[in-house]
Image (cartoon, rainbow, N blue to C red; front, side):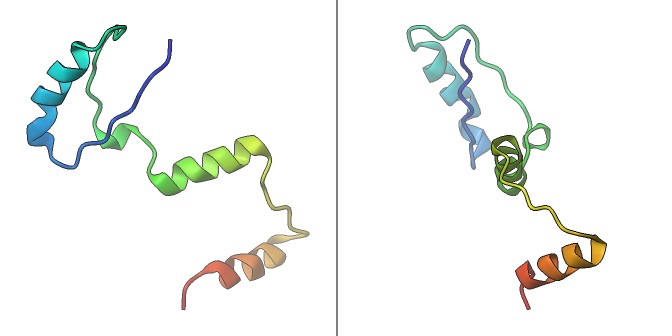
Length: 74
């Protein structure tokens, strides 16, 4: 089974969106999940990078701090 995640900015449309999706051929079920259950965009990207092996290895903690400090905005 494949899942499709739809994010709504306006929750007042939720009922209509659910009804429309249920009418599509092949839809087995429609459920609602609060955004707190889903990772934010930054976390999702980090998870994808981790799964791909796109990680950074540092010699020690100080090397890690130097790397992170370069990435932080001023």
